[in-house]
Image 1: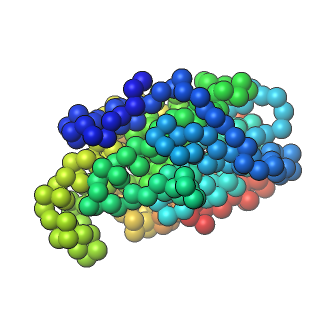
Image 2 (image 1 turned 60 degrees about the horizontal axis):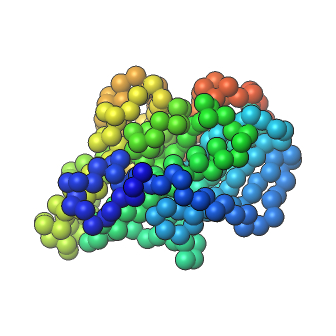
Length: 308
C-alpha cells in the first residue's frame, strides 16, 4: 500500500489512506537490551522501524514453549506508556499468548519521540502522529507473524482510553485482529471538543480562532471511533466502561455502545481505570476468543489497573 501523504487536502484523507503503509518494507527488528526472565516468561526490550518515522519501542513478552501461540498487541492511554500493560501481558503469557506492549509515538524517548497530542494550532502534526500510532500497531502484527510461532487466526488487541478509541480505527482498517478489547475509549474526540465548555479548551479555541478550530476538527474527525464504527464487524469488539468515569461519562460511552451494535459491552461501578472485575472479564473473554489456557486468580492478582 502507498503511504499517506499529509500534504493532501483533508477531504482526501480518510482513515484507510492515513493508516496505509508498505507491508513489504523491512521490519528492522532489534533487541535493545538483554531479555529478562520472569519466571519462565521472556521479556524483550525491542524496537522496529516505523513506516512514518523513527523506531517503535515495545516490550515483547514470550511464553515458554514452542507454540503456536496467540498474539496480542496493547496500546496505552494518552498519559502513560508501555509499562501500563506489562503486567497484564505477563498474565496472558501464562495462557499462551505472545504480546507486544507498545509505546505510542508521543511516549517514546529521545529521537524517536513524536509530539502532537492536542496540537490545536498544528492539526496536521496531530493527525499524522495519531495515524502513526495505528500504523505502528498494524506493523506490530507484522512483527508477531514474522516470528513463525504466532497463529494468524488468533490475534487480539487491548487498548485503554486514547488507545481504545484508536482500536476502533484499527478494526476498521485491518481485519487481522479478530478480538479487540476497548477500555473506556472516547467515542469522538472532535465531538467532545464541539460540545465541551471546559475553560482550557475554550481558551485554545479563542487562541487559534474559529477558522483554525474548524480545520483542526475537520482533519481529526476521520480518526474518531464513531466515524469508523460503521465499517467494523462489532462482534469483534468488547467494550468496557465505568459508571463513575469522569473522563468518559456514561451518557458519552453510550454513544459508542449503541453504535457498536452486536459488540459485547459491560459497565462497572468504577472510574477511568475500571477495576479488578473488568480485568478478570477481559482476560476471560480473550482466553475464550483466542483459545488460551485458563489463567488463574493468583495470576490475575498480579495485574494492576491501567494508568497505575
